[in-house]
Amino acid sequence: MDITNFEILDLGPAPEGLYDEWGASYRPSMTCSVVGEGSNAGKAFADALDQLALEGYDTKLLNESGMEMGFYSMAASTPATEIEPHVDPDEDEPADDSEIVYHVGIRYEGLDEVIPEML
Image (tube, rainbow, N blue to C red; front, side, top):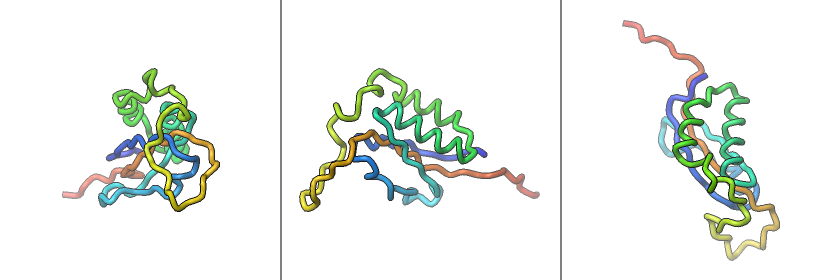
């Protein structure tokens, strides 16, 4: 199966599970999503790709985009605990003792098969 349209979002360090409810985009074409978690950005991106591969999607184009976005750079191997979180904790919520992990989201439009248009 091919992914025909996608966006990769660097969600950054946050408590594990924070983005469990993160979903598809407001754009009608982005109907599906995955969130990868890992100890750094590179591992979170790899986790997101693994999730897509397990669902049967070809991830070659996403992998190439990840190289361009720097998910394979030295900076991507910096531990999530050493980076300032991208989200501020809610002051009304009790302190969350969840482990801090890095999150990378991928929203996508996938087609199971391409049907040629009839003339």
